[in-house]
Length: 295
Image (cartoon, rainbow, N blue to C red; front, top):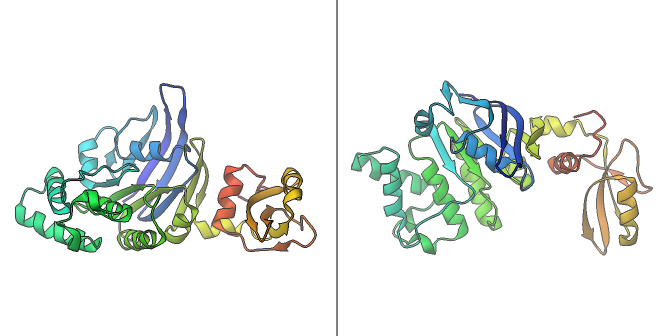
């Protein structure tokens, strides 16, 4: 199965250009769509899911044309949107059964087996009789991915799934995604770099509705070898350094500023060369630093 996105553009009524000639080829496995808030990620996810139309371009999943065959798309699609609403006074078992019926699973025995299987897989079976309003953020996200797996989907879309989760829930969610992402297409849309670096064999960086970088994470950052430098500087010097150097990122450390700089040669005396990371590629891309033609 392959997802093919060809020259897709979308402009909203307020003249916001959410997508600009986006083209991607995505096969089985985990694919990370990385970008800041407002980059166009959710617009692209909703368009792939058939929830809104693009102005131009075409999206196909296998032989299915998304804009023309929405009913066929829904048969193979699992979707966890960024905002996933739950009925707080209904328990997990009741809502899951209802969602399975809506997905077309009419046989009660089949629904019961499916419900137990998916709620167990997401570590929610023991909470099946609890009202959803009592669920933690992580439990709600796991319920969301469980419902996205109804019907054995071939394309799964998860939009900002770990935002707001504590580290334990985030790790649990990562493990769950990695288990289901081997034999189907899973698109992980996020602004959290670690989610992509931990899970995805392929990725794209999107900004202002345009795909800026696409490829395998390790191959992409390998192109930055010998270009990333790190060191501590005084806070009073940081503004000037940022003006005169390509600062990728910065953080406070021991009362000073730890910075990472993109340069072919040692940018500041005492700085040390360091191995590039996906975060370096991400920040260098969205900040439009000069990658010296190597990406």
